[in-house]
Amino acid sequence: MSLCIVGSMAFDDIDTPHGASGKIIGGAGTYIAWAAANFVKPVNMISVVGGDFPKEEMNALNKKGVDLEGVKVIEEGKTFYWSGKYHDDMNTRDTLITELNVLDGFNPVVPEDYKQNDYLLLGNLDPKVQLNVINQMSERPKLIALDTMNFWMDSAMSQLKETISCVDVLIINDSEARQLSGEQSLLKAAEEIAKMGPQFQVIKKGEHGALLFHGEQVFFAPALPLEEVFDPTGAGDTFAGGFMGYLAQTDNTSFENMKVAIIKASVLASFCVEEFGTQRLREITDKDIQIRINSFIDLVKFDTHFETKEEFN
Amino acid sequence: MSLCIVGSMAFDDIDTPHGASGKIIGGAGTYIAWAAANFVKPVNMISVVGGDFPKEEMNALNKKGVDLEGVKVIEEGKTFYWSGKYHDDMNTRDTLITELNVLDGFNPVVPEDYKQNDYLLLGNLDPKVQLNVINQMSERPKLIALDTMNFWMDSAMSQLKETISCVDVLIINDSEARQLSGEQSLLKAAEEIAKMGPQFQVIKKGEHGALLFHGEQVFFAPALPLEEVFDPTGAGDTFAGGFMGYLAQTDNTSFENMKVAIIKASVLASFCVEEFGTQRLREITDKDIQIRINSFIDLVKFDTHFETKEEFN
Image (cartoon, rainbow over all chains, first blue to last red; front, side):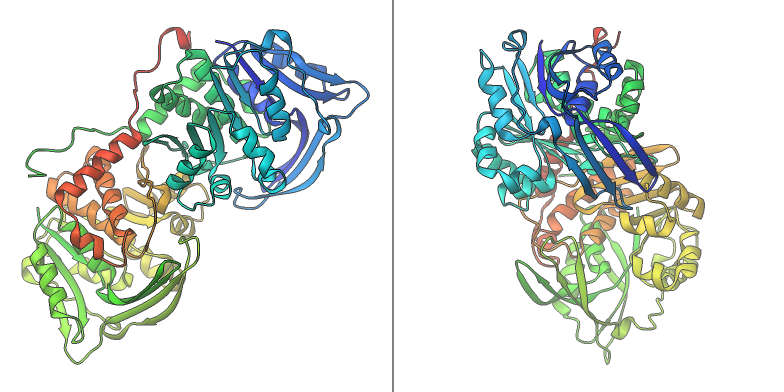
């Protein structure tokens, strides 16, 4: 099935305890595209870059199966730039520089070919821009997912809530779920978010895994334990891209299939953090993914028939 | 099979954002006993209390299946007292008052009947006291597990390492595993701990679940998502008690069976945090436990046969 994604393309400059990346390719849209294209082709991408964005990068994405008709190139403009520094525990970071550049005032135009796509993933962006994309679709997609972050809750909560009310799946992290809902318990947070519109709530907990909620149903998937987290940038976007890529590939929006999508998403995110930027996502093969899915299954499987009659008599 | 446990019995006074407990019964040994006795009877308990410790409390434990021959009563002494205050997120706490009282200089005497017990759980205590108990066993137990905390790493690391070198299973939380091993990655931390002696490493992550390591094998079990964490005190002890109680009950120390023990342990800990102190542990029935184990299975189960041939061609 067809997947349309929207998200930023950027230059990032990342400082971690392991070293500095220098100026590399980043952006939520970029990570989403690299992840989703493992499962579905083409990935129809909506974004904006400046004339400084490398053509080789566009070619590499295209070769992976990403359609770039929806990526506007503003030749005289500069690409969005973000610089950040991670703390020693790699769980928190400070933003050092944000230069919106061409992202400032971004007014996405959805190409005709994308307007009937069945799956739509709105990567982290101004919720006004996300809504604008929804409104341009000629038919209501079968499934719309939205990723966002605390920045929009702080600066544009009412717009964000309006956009959220139009989507099926909200993908956010645990602290954002708490901020959005005002609830400390993630169970209660998911209930509150359901009232806002999205019938599926995906709550990412970084190294602690992810939860999927739908009504009374809950599913939990751990993150794969890693020897080292080299650079967490883009892991959440990669997760979202893997999740929707797999749903679009299988064209099945059942809770059961979403569980599998969460596992695929976790596996892709586990690759993302192993190198700076999109480096690992560019290298991985279907076999690499499969090996890690097997590790995931080993990590969580147990004999569900362990109860003997004697034990609970 | 027979289980011997050692751990403190105490009065606790707990302040949380939900309210204050007043002076209630606590102590690692108490939580361990209440948890383990759901699976194996008798639980042979080694501890010490003052003359102020309520007889009804001893009777209640005894009725649950806890043998108290190993609990020394120092009539003229006062029971260990701990007072603490939880922060708003319930994940961190400050100790307000610690009065060791009869625990100061505690010299455990293992009753003859306990000396050939097959399973031995050393609850969080001075590592010198823990080693003392090991040394009094007439035969090396089939499985020795040890729980400890950062306090002993800060104050008695070399004694702690000596004691750890004598046990099979180390049960600690994530920050303690990092402190003990000097490794940020829990995978690497488990490897380092294996070199210290314990061939099984259980790393508790509180609301984020628990990991079990054994050589190259890893198992992860989430904590059950809860509407509310009322009082986390004793959850780790309860976990350890449930874990060893189940292993003693089933008399099976395989990695596969330890996975199940981790699940049982998580379920018992999920009850513990619902009320102050041991309140919930006193109330629960085998049926309550079974219902929650079913919830656990629902939380993590997925179709492991989701891969189609097409998908990874």
